[in-house]
Image 1 (cartoon, one colour):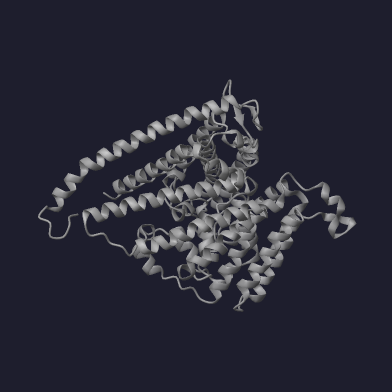
Image 2: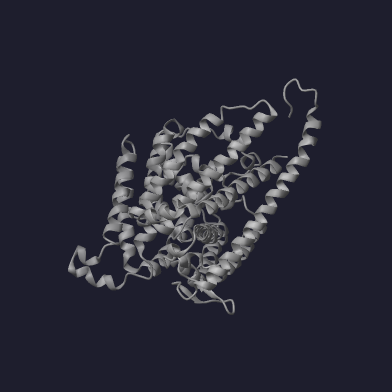
Length: 536
């Protein structure tokens, strides 16, 4: 593209810019290679020098290397992976065998899945399954009684937030609270705390209630207009968004399907989060967007990424540094390495956990949103980061929180409510609240700047260059803010902010901060180059 009135042709301008872009890209790649090489070397040295002081290291599967098992969530998932895979295989053989062998649809498929899922839940929670069924039953009664009233969604939200809070305050309750004659049931609480998994059940109960209320009040989804923009629907298939937005007939909101939706084994422990409409629609017609070959490739990629995290936890003990609280003994640059390493470990951990259960669900015929559609290193702003981190939860928040609060019309206010709910939903801890509010504090300027940037159109070559550089710098600032928020939320905690600030603002830390910011600048610029290449 040329400046208006310029004698240079568009083709000549494009050709003249190619060598410069290639030279810049080569320089950026060279910097990235040097930086990551230095980071790997320093990480290996830190793991070696502090191995005797780190908590959570155990004998690993790689000879001569200790494995970082300090993260309880990953340790439990990895340790239970063999038995979980056996359960998955048994569930799929029985469920798919009956579903396809007996041509089960709707109620028939719901009944089979519910029976198998309840057996699974009894193994996980023992007698505590009773708590789940009672709360689910009360929620269903509330939805059915008040669905035709305008304030129904408010009642649904109030009840579920109350349950979310009470479950945590009373740590899943004790049966003795409800009478000494039930106290013996406390000896049969299963192998997994039910109130931890119940966080996802709360999302599903809210989804069921809101979807049912909105169906009664009429659906505003324009399927024909959507098909014109959606390649999947235009090809004759049905995308997940259409399944979610397209209202079902009233007779599809039954107690049997509702319970099946709440307890569906493949998605029960960790998601991904699927709306009631999308789930119930696939009871009659199993997903067809993924072929058998594509699902097999999906599983193979999961295995390769599992091998990657095995290498990571055996050679780089990032999470163990956090658990051991040794970050105070490190230099500012080493604190950055550990923080970045923890963030990447968390991304890869959740990537594997969520994709495992999504694979299970896909084989069972239910499509769910991909929770990690984009690598954490490919998110130059907070908005794209949150759209790509626990993406199914993000979709849920948009549908059931953000849009009802006013959507983009009240974005600056809605973001505070959304992130506060996210923090409370995860756990009742002040460090998560502080993480949520810090994220909002960084998010608000980005929203304001984006609103001005979208209305700005650079007409000259110099103007486009300056605009691009400002976008890259803004991206680097955003990534820095995201790193700080996650440092507070997952590494140092609110109590360590003062120590962290004193370390990072000391004059000896300025060179390290300069290198860190330069690295973020280079990373964001590489992202821009990649996206430009995809457009051509």
